[in-house]
Length: 117
Figure (tube, rainbow, N blue to C red):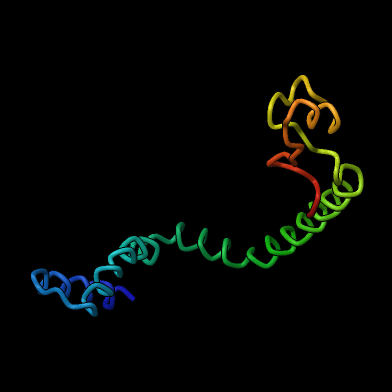
């Protein structure tokens, strides 16, 4: 890995004045330079290995959090669907659709509402 990163960096530096699309890919490989630090540092290698091994558990937790979020979203739709409307003229004074249309306003839904999940 070190050889690949160093050789791509040298090749990129040799072709600094050349504007070819394939060379741009080599320039993006500069982001791999910090990975060289991981291969030389034993403690960092251990941390990265533990992080990669824990991705399965993190994914399981994200699924549970997503299900809980979905449950509360469904409850919000059941409780508040169709109830977040306001008048375009004065939403803090005109509280009903009849009052709003009487003064010439439009009865519209808020930007943030619970009409869908």
